[in-house]
Every structure is written in C-alpha cells, then in structure tokens.
Image 1: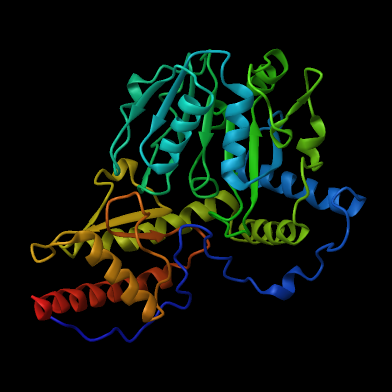
Image 2: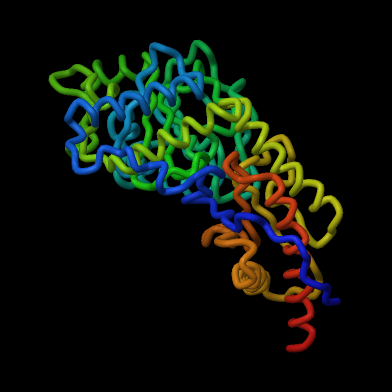
Length: 384
C-alpha cells in the first residue's frame, strides 16, 4: 500500500544524534562577539571559559564543591581522562549496554589491563543494577546514545559507597535528572543535548574524586592532555577556565549562546519537559502502528533523547537494508537527516528528541516515517 506524501514538513529536518540540532534561535551573527584571534589565556578568553563553567553549574544544579572543567576531545576525551586518572586504586566494575559503554570496557580491560568485572546487556536493555557493587569503582553510561536506553535513577548507588562512580552522561545532561550526590566523575560534550559545536568535553568531579586524584598515582604513563594533577595536587586552573589545550573561542561562544537559550526556556526543568514532549509524540505514533517498535521495550529505561526504533513486518526480509532505505528516502525528501540506527546497533531508526528539537517538528516527521515505510514496502513488492 502506497500513501500520499504528507502536506506538512518539519521546519528543521535535523534529527541527528550527534552533532545534534542547534538551538531553535541560532544564527551565525549571534556569535559575532566571540573573541576570535585572541589568546584563550588572555583575560577575555579566560573570562568566557569561566562563564561557561559557571552557567553549566547553574543550569545543571551541580553542587558548589564539585569541580567543572572544559577538556579536550569531546566526551570521549573526558571519559578517558577520568578513567586514566582515577582507576586502578580499587577493584572495578564495567557496565555496558551499547557501543560507547563497550568501548570503555575495551579501554579498561585491554589498554589499562585492569582485572575488571564486566557486566553487559543487549541493545535496548540494561544490566540488573541491583547486582552492581558500588564499593568498587563503577564505569557506566547514563543514557545509551546508540541503544535508546537510560538509567532510571541513582537509587542503586550507595550513599556510603567506597568506590567512585564514573558516569558518561553525554546524551543525558540537560535532558535528564542526574543525582550529583551519587556521581563522582561525570562527563558530557557540547554537541549533544544543547547542539553545541564538537571537540570540547566537560568533566565534573566530586570531592571524593578529587581526594582520589590527590592520594593516588596511577601506574601507567599519563599523556599531557590527561594530566589533572601536579606534584600530587589538583591543577585547580583547569576548573576555572584555564584549559589544558587550546579551545575554540568560537565554539565557546556557541556553547554560551546555547546556555543562555537553555536558561530562557526554564533551565534543566524546561529542557527536560521539551525532551519528554518529543518522546511522547513518538510514543503515541508507535502505539498506533504495529510495524514500528521501540528498541527499548521497557518505558522505565527508555531514553527521551536518543529514541531508537525498529521495524517489524513479515514482508521485510533484510531488516538492515530496509531501514537504510527508509532513512535514505526521508533524507532525500528533506524531512529527516541522519536518523539511521548506529552502525553497531540493531537495524532501525534513531531520532534525536533532545530539548533543541521542536515538538511540532517531531509531530510533522511521524507521518513521513509512515509514508517512507509504505513506499519501501511497495518497492519490495515490485522487486519480488
């Protein structure tokens, strides 16, 4: 059955899960005050970097005694920095339920060569958190960007834990509640939920993590861009805007613009509500169509940012090819860019629903998915 193309189109077809959609009010001229051609170590540069840290703290509600640093190499750099500096002092549990978490397992087991306990779950699921021993150091992703799952809460993390929690929160920050008292090293990147430009990561450290840094020296060599201490003391400058390497002041200005916009829509509460509204639109559509399902079948662990969907129809014999064709048809129509499932994930679609995406655009996209689905089903019949 073929159906007519919908009359309404998304105003912004950018539903990529990273880099993600810019804020709805973005224009390049709003970055005209960026201190380009100036040193990031000059007063103006350090002031802008410090402001980015302070506004991040205010919007996310990060406790005053937690350090926030801008670090190289996006979320990946921030996670690697945390693991290389903090791990090795205690036994480690590694939790993985999607490709990035699996990557952290590889780094810890094969690069740092730690005898870690590794707990994994298939895409669309998470491990049994009740079995996690937080008296060990624990590394995990809060939101599985490539699998569409999220940790439901921090109740499984003991308040009096002896270990540190290292949390990759790159597609959860600014869209989900993060219990800071349960998190010791938390990371994210600018290009996810707030649609900032790439290459910059954020590392947030609890007092417990700082204590570890100042009392423990890892046995492995530490690359310069990973070094957080000097002579056994935290390099405090990193956490007031004195970055380890040269940041892009244009990207910094873009992040500041996004933070201002975030404050204007109600801060974390407003951003979370926007993401929840976007997920609700997808949920209602999936509920009306039996050929489409969430990869995360349990609503309690379903992400409100990286929403992963799978197709189910007896006429589909090659799920990967079918999903790729649907995504390509939507891109060619100019209604959805970059929404194919992650390359290591089960075949399907992945729609970014973070706060920078407008809910009317998600609503407009849904009928186009139906149109593309039936167009590809018709193509299968012709080619049969």
